[in-house]
Length: 179
Image (cartoon, one colour):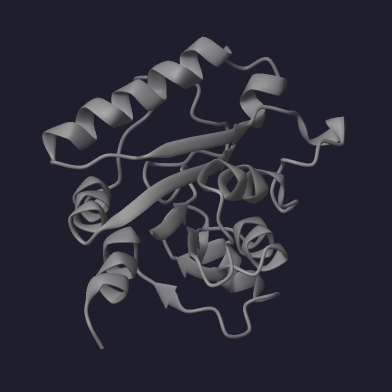
């Protein structure tokens, strides 16, 4: 199985400092849905690992989060694509869970779901916490400039050896194009 793990906000859809709180605010980034469909056509299993502390902060309900993911599935189906598995951390930052990235809990959930090692698995994110979670399980972090990616680059910490791409479409092109 060829597995790839994507962050959600800032990689697949637009991000906002005050959170994506409704289905209407869930707006795919240009080219992201086609990129996921391209991964599917290339034989990749696509998982999403996303921090969704807006639930824990009381900004939106779990049902709203599920509705956002249903919207993603509908829009992807129109592009001939799909996300095979979504895991999320609904906890607020102070709750001390093991699933909030940069902790590796979400990654371990994906590994358990697929009964596989994540060593070398591409993890595409826009923040240092995505990269750190990937490293914690031996996965291969990849950074996109979309979402919070430019801020992550400007901070500069923890980026040694991490390839940087304009967006998800560029990262996917690198993954699926034979070298």
